[in-house]
Length: 90
Image (cartoon, rainbow, N blue to C red; front, side, top):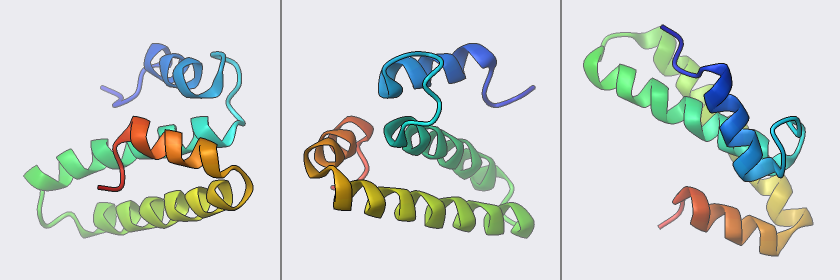
């Protein structure tokens, strides 16, 4: 069973990107990577020795970090709103 169905992806894009077809917006990309990170984190809590998935998780965290840095540099108000909405930094 896939962790993200088409409906769930469309919902994420509609919520964060403005519409279900706006997959290129930086907010939608960050939200999608965050959803993947949470899914993989749940998997790794049950499968502690899955090192290849752990490496993939670290790559996704780095990708999200780069996307957030880009957004912070170009749209500070949007960055702060997205951080609050996704509950990333505490």
